[in-house]
Amino acid sequence: MQDLVFATNNSHKLEEIRRIVGEGFNILSLKDINCNDEIPETADNLEGNALMKARYVKEHYGYDCFADDTGLMVDALDGAPGVYSARYAGPGHDSEANMRLLLKNLEGVVDRNARFETVIALILNGETVIFRGQVEGEILLEPQGVDGFGYDPVFKPSVSPVSFACMSQDEKNAISHRGAATGLLIRYLESHLL
Ligand code: IMP
Image (cartoon, rainbow, N blue to C red; front, side):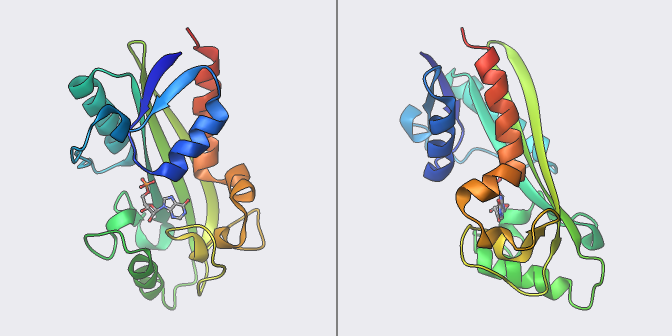
């Protein structure tokens, strides 16, 4: 089996990928390769950050690797919070505060169109490949549902009558930005088994 690092310590994301990839690749986390570094994520776009993280692991630890970055782009806010989605309300990762600020900035705004985008950068066998997934939707007037994470309670995909936070993991994966990008990655990996 070929070792492949997923540049994350998010156990949920790891488990999901491991379940889908199956036998072909041995998916390692940052912890598995003893990487405790604060990997820089200083690009001003999702692709730049995903590439930065994947290249960092390849250069410093020698492993083939993939890394992801996700953002929520709101049309009426000129694409904000975008690449800064995790720290929209300031440093730290307080989803409640991020959501509150988003709703405040959209008070009285009629155009509530938004999209989630995930970019995955893969470095494998000397090649660098980018995969993208998007889901269109709108920002609700108030939070709805209790499942999921991040901005899920205020994001309603266009193809759904309810927010992401009202869906099971499988229902969300089937239509989500991350599900789409991950699907493309998996297909690529399956066709590049050594
Ligand atoms: P990351 O790049 O996956 O860490 O995502 C960056 C930030 O975007 C997270 O901290 C969340 O605030 C937000 N985010 C990413 N994916 C989702 C999602 O599927 N639902 C809601 N919020 C998300």
